[in-house]
Length: 184
Ligand code: FNR
Image (tube, rainbow, N blue to C red):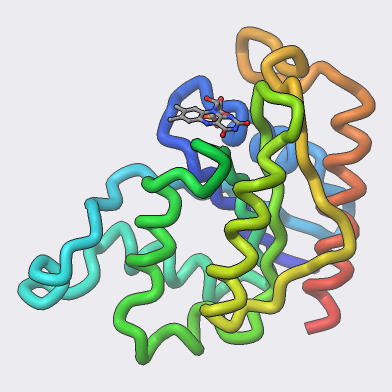
């Protein structure tokens, strides 16, 4: 059994990225578990806060979920052709203290996926993530990319994925990444 963690980088209730993550959880095939996580409750990174209180509980909990997973998929929105601040802030917290980076990120399989209403499906945000994940020593999967464009047309009012072609691409993406993560 391969255990994957998916993290949605949007705080919105009606987030397309969270909806995509939920569809991936539902479609995960035999031999794969995909657990959904989010970034709610994580404060803005502040070195004074860290010095006074250490890493916040929500950050510590997410770190341990990453450590326990065989691989992690970031479901990233795109803002102004790059990574949304709230999601980058989360990863910045997760990289503290720096002595823990190797345990949390070192050699860990990571994959990138994203949904946007635009035509490029978070291409530039995903590109921006490559530098960050490289810096942290993660093992980024380059076997497939999942960029879901015009995403607002692919889900119903309850956030359910209604487009069969996208569901097929999503399931193949998760299966391909699970194979990669299983190889250690
Ligand atoms: C956006 N959006 C956006 N979309 C895109 O494809 N490229 C972009 O550069 C941007 N820039 C951008 C900036 C800001 C400040 C906002 C608020 C939005 C649109 C964005 O993709 C859309 O709001 C998605 O629905 C956000 O993802 P969630 O919250 O639905 O997961």
